[in-house]
Every structure is written in structure tokens, then in C-alpha cells.
Image (cartoon, rainbow, N blue to C red; front, top):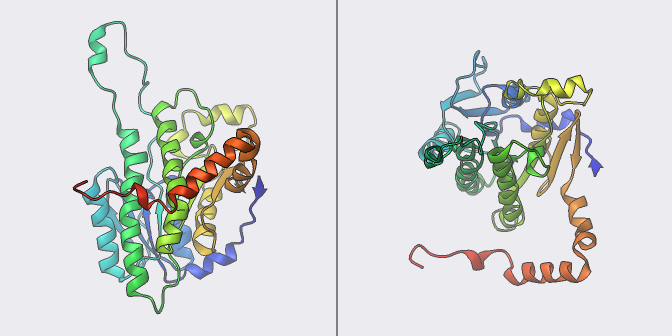
Length: 298
């Protein structure tokens, strides 16, 4: 892995840029909103919770948004665009931690007839998918309509260490965060190549927020380094304010690492050269991905 140096001076380039954030009333998102406003950005926050207290900044707008509801995500972006006439960046940070225990079905067969709650998948994965689709639409529109003043547009997705590690008990959470990585991998070259939109993903390790208040004690008791929300928020702003594209940033123990390129470099080793060559040949045969696109009636 390669360590990433974050220079907060680059954040000043975000002045007057419009950033749509999903999930920023508390935790990492709240710190990111504060830092964006401090850099002079205009922030449109969508969350199911109102920030308390709300930032006392004329550049801040809050819109009640449940990312698991498509109409709500459309409303978030359409309102942001109507308010500011442009959107420069978007951060998909809304998320839930594991709810319930997937395999706790009890002794009676009657209990298995009730499906498990899927709010974690709905918010973390479906919500990210909705957010990404709508964000790309408005970022594309903004680049065209503000061509003389807007030269960049980017999207940051948020996965987790559970998006590549093994975490017993986090069944739906891990599935959702692996899903975010799947979306990132399939979109990273496509979006920049076809739309000129940069997409990156951040994978935080344990971060000291309310979401993990029930488990973080084990980390601290065993002297395992944890992130502060600012460490992750700084990584968000680094991705927005530089030309980074198609990269995965892992944040652990307060430090940020780029992990996508090292993984790509070792694929021939763990697959073997012949299988790697087959993989690459298949990817080249499918090109930019248009072969997968089907019309509504096909």
C-alpha cells in the first residue's frame, strides 16, 4: 500500500463549489460538512436527521432525505441544482451498521417465515446506487451548462474495511459494503471515460463515532489504533480538491492509504499469469461496458 499525503491547503480550491452530501447530520459526515463550509464550499446536506445544531452558514442547506427512497434522492439533487445552478461534487456517506442477527431464527420453523429486516441493504447499497445514478445525471448536466466555469466533477462513495475484510457478525453490512466496491469497480473507468466524472471510494477502518459506540471499546482496550472522524473527512476533501480518480483510499489509525493500484499490480501473482491474461482479454472484449446496456424493451 502507498501512504497518501493530505495537504489541507488544497481544500481552498473548493471555495464557491457546490457539494451534495448524503449522511452528514452526525459523525464523519458532520465533520466533512463543517470542513467544506470552512473551505468556502456551498453544501447541500441530505439526511433523515436534522443537524443539531445546524451550521450557521449561508452556504448551508438541509433537505430531509431518505436515500433508500429514489424520489427523495432526486429531490435532494434537483433542489440543490435549482438553488445553486450547478453541482461540482457529491459524497455518498449515508449508512447504517448491522441491525439484528441474520441467523437468529429460533427453534420454531414459524420464525423463518418472517423475512429479516433489510434496512442496512436498503440504505448502504440501494441508497448508494440511487445516489450515484442521480448524482451522475446532475454532474453531467452541470458540466455542460457551466462549461465556461466548471472544469471538474467528482463523486465519492463510502465503503468500509468491511468492504474487503472478514468481519463475522456483520452479514448485511459487509454484503452492502462489498456491493459498494462492486459499484465502484464497474463505474470507475466507465464514468471518467464516458462522462468526464471522477469517482473514488473511501474505506474507513474503525472510526470513533456514535455508530460504533457499542464495539469500539474492544479496540481501545487492546490498544488498536482507531480513526477520528476528521481523518476520514480530510480524505473526502482531498479527493474532491485534487485530480485523483478511480482510486480506493483506506483510512486506518488516522492514516490514509491508496489500495486499488497495489491490488491490481498483484493480480497476476494470485491468479497466475494465464488466468490473468484470460481475465484481461475478457475485459478488453467487452470494452467500455456498452455491450451490457439493454433498452427498455429488450
